Amino acid sequence: YYALKAARPEDLERLSIAVALNPDEETGSKASSAWLKSIAAKSSRALVFEAARAGGQLVRSRKGSTNYVVTFHGKASHAGNAPYKGANANIAAMRFALAAAGLADVDKGTTVNPGVIEGGSAPNVISEKCVVKLDTRYWNNEDDKYLDDGINKLAAVSHSNAMPLSDATKELVAQITEAAKLEGFDIDWVDAGGASDGNHMAEAGLPVIDGCGPAGGEFHCDREFLRLDTVEERIRMITRFLSLI
Image (cartoon, rainbow, N blue to C red; front, top):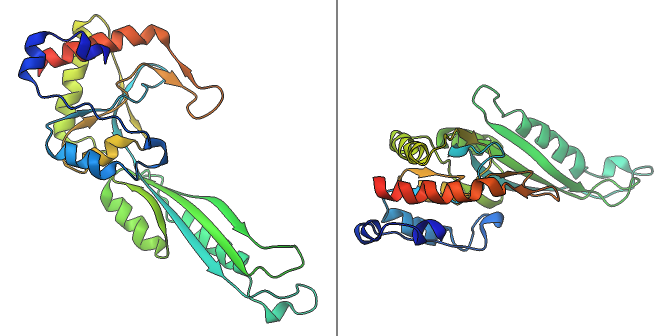
């Protein structure tokens, strides 16, 4: 808001700027992702105003993210009197979770996290049902397909393609870096493991950067903070950027 308010009239007249605000980003932008993609399809570049990293770094690429819910159905029985008449869903779910975690590749940067396993009713009952909730992360969509094929059984609750560091994005990174330098400060960049609305817009093929907001850290906990000393400089950076494109 303040970057546009401070922009030169000739820049606002020359550029066609869409400001998109959505309230459901933290839950995967399920209601707004199609809308964001439609805006991205008509755009040449995108800036996402998530917070910068604690050290002030902006985000030039992000991992994609997929969530899976896999439900196992067994057969209940008494664990002491008739254990062999049952089929333990918990054991099947644990085997699956271990196998899914084994799909991760440290060198590729892919991860598979069985973050939630819920099953059983009592210690003396063979579990009739167990649910495993997985989170996968990946730098490119080929690795996403590999993980997706490997997991096989799933019920997807949210999915974001990767926000890659393409050649076009590198040009956008250079423009933002130059804008900051012209305003008297240097910025650094990171490649982030978390997904944002930038991932949805990157599906349209346009260059996207993130972390354009003020710097902060300790996200999603009671220690989350914003660095007030970075607010004004980020406004000046974006206003200067508008004069360069």
